[in-house]
Length: 382
Ligand SMILES: Cc1cc2nc3c(=O)[nH]c(=O)nc-3n(C[C@H](O)[C@H](O)[C@H](O)COP(=O)(O)OP(=O)(O)OC[C@H]3O[C@@H](n4cnc5c(N)ncnc54)[C@H](O)[C@@H]3O)c2cc1C
Image (cartoon, rainbow, N blue to C red; front, top):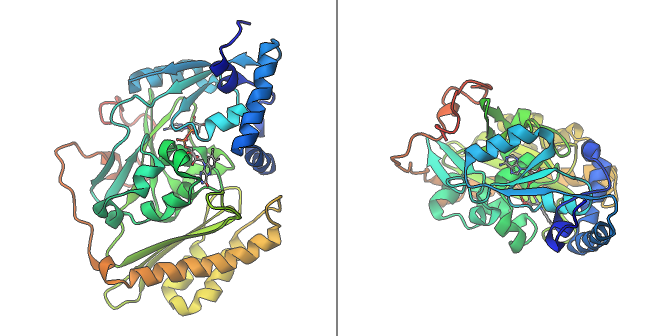
């Protein structure tokens, strides 16, 4: 085996375990504890010394591409051996800790047009290279259209990580304790995937399959996540229990409440995160609030507790997590409701006119269509 450079040795290694551990929640939680910055550095140093001794690691190939066609061709050619690199804020720690060992990294950071946020046809479309920080600093129009951007983004890690990490990467990564998967699920977002076989649009409700497991094939690229623009009189909240600022949530709740002109609840959307193998939409609790109003918040919170299946781990017992779902669910819905009553939420999102072709064309016929192969040349429509 050729001796790798320091960079390759540190960041690009085929390491100790194979990724069949991915579906095991306990293993993943352990991995996350390992993945604090110091642990990553320590681990990288250990792997580096083993590489230098010619031990059991081999080097991952790294390709930086500036076209979607090339990226798709590489994924096609290498299948499960390839991993797409977006912000690298989950992938690189997993590689450093030895839990992932792709044969080839396909870096798409120079692919044009993936870093746009587009408002059109009552959807906000977030491209694959839009960073957490961009959404945190959303301008007034964007925040008005989708207030969960500036609400959820500041809760993710810290600014350097938010400068690199992407919403789409987070959704694809499917961490059950992450904010964006829960936001996408709560609001009825859809994930747009392309491959050389065609394009698919998958609703969030079908996308999350388990911890770090989502409905995406190895040859597919998620080019965007589309999220429905909120109606007037909508308030949102993300409430989470963390032990340190920026940590992953021990228990988290996303709530979005819309009121009608008379001030009654017109729509209520709630998703939990950190309490099960995937983010969870708690529709029974939503219906209870829609039908009986905020006065029945306690009963709705009990319905949310009943749906979740939390695990005990180093951060909290399952019982404590259940208690906290109750508490944070009540807090999140109440906070969203209060915001929905504020005068500024009465305005409606103003449609942004654009000469560009409709980027959500595939959504026009509903989130379940079209399926694989419906578009012969997906890049042309991108
Ligand atoms: C110390 C630390 C703390 C963190 N804390 C939080 C937190 O509190 N909350 C939180 O939500 N996140 C947290 N994160 C994760 C961070 O939000 C990541 O940015 C995010 O999970 C992944 O986005 P990324 O762009 O970095 O993806 P990458 O790391 O580049 O990729 C992640 C995975 O998704 C795949 N992928 C990425 N983009 C695409 C695409 N467009 N198409 C197909 N596959 C794709 C990659 O192949 C890889 O398997 C933390 C990360 C670190 C290092």
